[in-house]
Amino acid sequence: MSIGGPRAATGARSAYPFTEASALDVLQAEIGRNFESDVCERMGQDIGFRFVTRFANGPAPFCAPLDILKFFCKDVWTELYGKKIDRLQTNHKGTFMCTDTAFLPLARLRRASAADIARFLAIHKGLIKGALVNLGVNVSEVSTQLLGAVEDTTTNNNPLGCCFTIRTT
Image 1 (cartoon, rainbow, N blue to C red):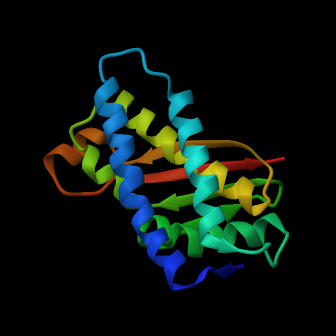
Image 2: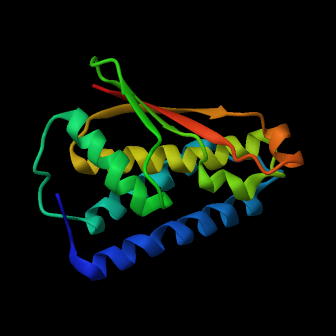
């Protein structure tokens, strides 16, 4: 998969701060209301799908899900979050675990409740699903698991990590 030139790269680097700011605005407006994480996930899916459409130029040069996931964890993740995924594991049966030990979007949510963090992560789950679907992976589910306790991050500067489990069909 080729990158769409310097213009596309500039747009890709500016996409994440806008996505994060928009997601935070949505969450802050909805705190204290009965807010469904499904809405966040659908919003993230749309953003991820559109991001890959602008990021990638032409059809994927590979078709195996593992190759696509490697590309996603290396190139797409770097454009979205400024670094590669720390660890990619698979059981070779359609389940992939992407671990980011210092997931940067969570750094701004240190004082948020666990429920608000879960809603915020729903956006990123959707973003991953939308991006991978656009790359040609049949994703059935994306789930998250925090690495570290939210309470610990309020007293020190240790970043929260996150493990995204991606199940394909």
